Figure 1 (cartoon, rainbow, N blue to C red):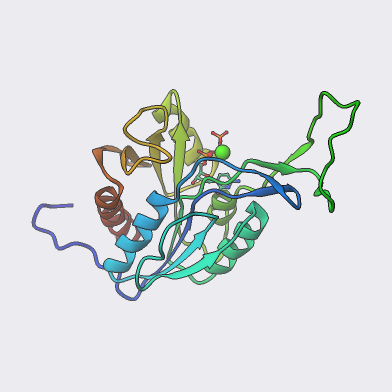
Figure 2 (figure 1 turned 120 degrees about the horizontal axis):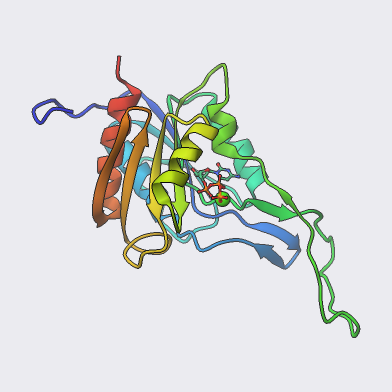
Length: 226
Ligand code: CTP
Ligand code: CA
């Protein structure tokens, strides 16, 4: 993008974004989840809306206000998030998977609260793999939006992110080192590397709101490139 080129507008474009964690229920009172705050996904939704897009934000359980002008769909588990994401993807031009989807869910949901007993000092929970939401959308042959994923890594960040870009057939991936203090899950700041088939670009540590503006600008440029 040249210094003098106007920012690519997203006016008239539809963008769908997943954000936050998912909760995988074990029984009526317990779940498996992770520390995702949803801040990055919500910041992306706000930035895309400001760029002129019609935004659908598919949100796991998070404690964040809905960005103004954004359509929010609240979900809990990965399967519910997948269904909402697939529906939104049918209509959108750009799909961004920013959610920290639980990789596994309990194999069965206990209808009643699981009780501890006198004799079970150890307990095991059987888990089954959740569907990969962003990969499912990127693998479409019809109605396939420009698809962007995130890669949360604690080591070999770029190598693992490039692997995910290829394996999931994404158009772009945002690599995120979640092992550093100044970044990752609950922080207001983050530093990322944007990777696509053409190469990579480091975006240094910034507020997630600022980073979101930069990411949306790059996604818009790449997605709408003739
Ligand atoms: N993702 C998804 N559905 C899943 C798991 C992940 O859509 N069931 C998406 C995330 O939203 C993110 C990307 O895939 O955009 C990468 O997520 P990440 O957890 O970093 O990668 P995984 O493929 O799950 O691999 P691993 O956790 O083993 O590193
Ligand atoms: Ca994962």
